Length: 196
Length: 176
Ligand SMILES: Cc1ncc(C[n+]2csc(CCOP(=O)(O)OP(=O)(O)O)c2C)c(N)n1
Ligand SMILES: [Mg+2]
Image 1 (cartoon, each protein chain N blue to C red):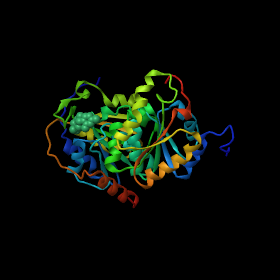
Image 2 (cartoon, helix red, strand yellow; image 1 turned 120 degrees about the vertical axis):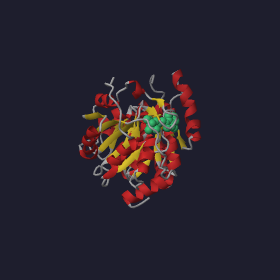
Image 3 (tube, chains in turn green, brown; image 1 turned 45 degrees about the vertical axis):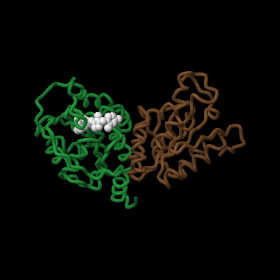
Image 4 (tube, rainbow over the protein chains, first blue to last red; image 1 turned 180 degrees about the horizontal axis):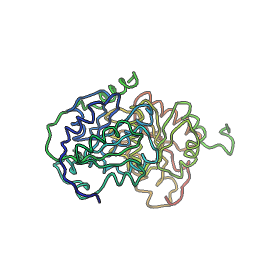
């Protein structure tokens, strides 16, 4: 169980900072608020938003990272979504994709469904689970200073890396990116591969 | 290659060659006895990446990511694993992402292990309810051509397709 520290980071500011200098990053977001965060700081054709398939963000990122070994792939998802597919950490750790980073926007809540507590609110330590699976880098971020140190890790340290960012559960406005599945798929593939 | 008429011929060798021919690069699976020989072949092939999953739904999501990144993959699963995939299949349907899957049946032809029967009997209805197109095969010689047809439907017509291999082909299996 993780040591409890005070949570102060604001998720929108965190995501803004994380994606500010994104370069040619490919981003997969988990359903719910991480998708809105990514859209709020700037919709992008290199973003693939999951609007369903809860538990599938990390493995979508793995399939993409294996297919595009020269590109950095970031999976940004919620604590609830990660918990549903937590076995995927073992699958990723065995594959050791050096271009894959996983970032949890951990508000310790199931945000979209009414802010019910997730397991992480009760001390379940996702980075410890990732480390147990075999991730060499698995960290928890609580402060602005730790965040500044974590951002280059997410963008460029050889993966797979796992960073859990503790954020407050204060409500945020909803910014809705496109949600039609074929539209999201087509624009992502067209931008990346030049074909749909 | 051993001819189909030979006693030592096994469908997995033709299916493996087909995978190479159509450019399959990612193979995801939870092992099953009925797929073991195919798994051995693809694992030994360095031109494709074998990914062992903790649960089959991971493989559905992985195939979505592979397609987004421009690669073709295949999900290998026992019929029991189909039950683990249902919600994730919604991503393939909603986004019209191709899915090629080989499903080895249990709980069907000559099954002696009672715990396989419920999911085995639900497998095809569950796939169809999830809008996955099902090609059922019950003769080993027809497996390669069926997989080839399914691959066209998947990758050229953007559909989720499952080739369901009857237990008649694989044998009644062990306890699992
Ligand atoms: C299989 C499944 N179960 C439950 C839900 C309902 N649901 C939608 S979003 C969500 C919570 C997501 O929580 P988290 O990943 O922590 O994201 P947050 O909104 O808190 O950032 C849940 C439980 C769902 N969409 N799919
Ligand atoms: Mg949450």
